[in-house]
Length: 273
Image (tube, rainbow, N blue to C red; front, side, top):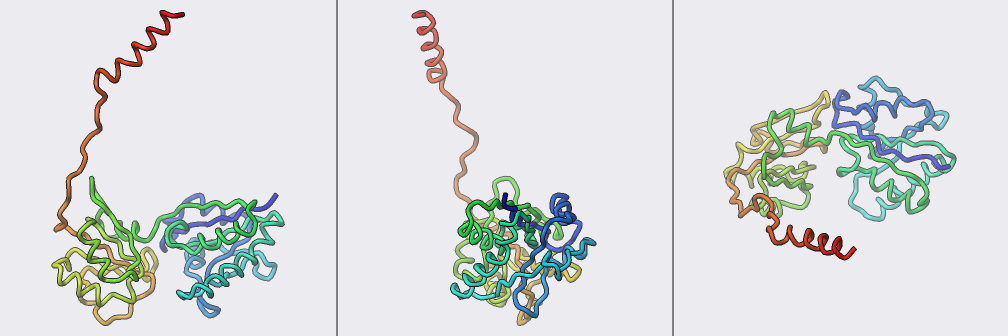
């Protein structure tokens, strides 16, 4: 029997937002811990969340815990090599019957490194079981911190990496009531200019490191012009000016003729019997 590869979602930063399922898995003495780092000199944000929850990783010297390198790059070849090395690291443990826990900040199914690791492992060894432990994503925690809903009634929502560019964001403003823009660091000044031009500055909030001790919430985003913000930052945009199209209300009811036909057929069959 092979072990299971778990994507253990820890929430965005506040250890009290960790699910009971995730906390229970991290207390298992027989499981191996792994976590992502961006470089050999960086610390793991996910591991810091577990530490704030009072959890201690197993002994690294015995191979019971280790960091896996996932570099911050858009170079497909470099990323592919990193995913392969990470999979080659955990696969022998899984094939030896050990369960491997991969720590993930936020939710493991939402813009998370875990998906790449799991796909690579499954490509190498289809028999390995993979389980995702769901968690609170940063944009949900941000809405709670701001005291505002992500969506109400028939509101539409788009969750988009800001790296797709300002032109796309502007087009989305016409189609969605709420935009969640992830990883806004490279384009923040351009986005501020866009929202100023569209008259939406008072409908945009900035959140950095949601739930962590260093969390920062900024409601006047013009104060962020020229500032170098953290990678773990987002914007939540609500557009009350959006023109909505026609919406379908209710469900179509069956006509009396449509509902009567099967009953008549049943009666004929009974008569034949």
